[in-house]
Length: 344
Image 1: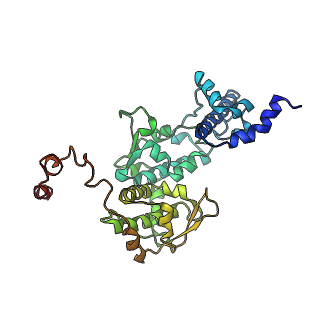
Image 2: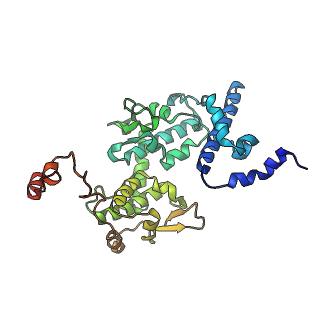
Image 3: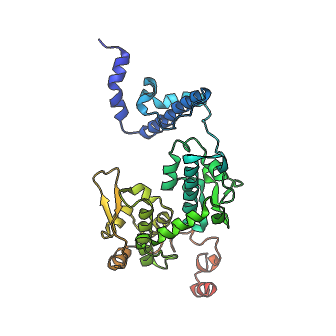
């Protein structure tokens, strides 16, 4: 005869592996509870005068048995009496020393580089946080318990955070570079030298600033993928990280509007530039094997499958509210000659 506790432990792997309705909610609940456990340890460490542990040190196996069995119920109880997350202050750069100062400068440069590649040199705080380099640095013990927005505020001469928007969600705040941001960068001269070396190294192909048609869009994405991979080290870069590069994201949005697009399929079109490791379906890796983009014979064939942007000229609401709606879309309209003349 076995006890109920032994039975629960024996059945736990089966319950944890059960798919279906609610599995995503259970997973999210477990993650939240793992953060809570790590939060408790952090508070205990701070009270004892010790350094708090990283936020991701608690694994799901470390959670109490009753929490593992029913994480949603445990999370509901936690929300009745929530605990504030333990955050550490982001000290001014001049107060930092040694490795902490070096990494803080590296993080500042990574944020600057990410914003430089954004459309209009600005983006949301949430999107900025997904940059691969920023993500890697924020995992370091010295940063993992610091608020990202506080790190941005540490460099007011470089970054401008718009906190006066309508949205109450911090991730929706807009972050942009100040006009003289490069002059305000810590170790600005070293950064400029590093950028010169980066652009000269390996003969990186010149970017296409504003693609004028689908063919140029495809070629531009090819070139920007080469640049992104080069920045990320060029070897066995996770496909997911590559797809989150700011310039790659812009190209993906444009091509998705024009037809079916898959970054994985796109990379396979250029075997002389990219090598794929598909040995692990859940962890595809990309390696940069060539910088030459002169051969564009495959560009036209690939681009031919894309049409005009989806929704162009379709639907009752198209152009409604825009200048010229009464000429082309409203009842009694349809005067295309006048419309063409109006837009030149």
